[in-house]
Image 1 (cartoon, rainbow, N blue to C red):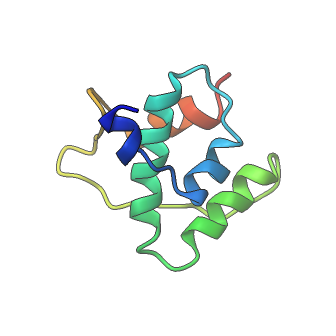
Image 2: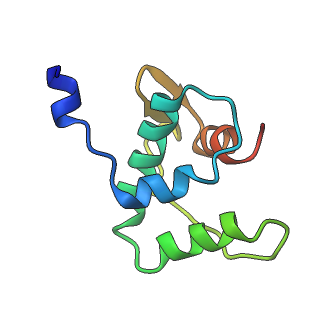
Length: 95
């Protein structure tokens, strides 16, 4: 058993959200992106529920799920930097 497997723990919320993954992004990268989002959404009451509702009922109207903006508006996941809406569309929308 290596050291990284000892410390790699995927929370149930991240696992649940990864269940709706559409894109062909690398699994570890997608997991890190979703984990970063979950950490931000836990600070906002009802945000996780709204995201799960939007993902589980595609085509149905849903509320916006917002996250705090960084100085340059981009988000870094692993070694890649990008706009948050593009990052999460790559995970959940674009196959």
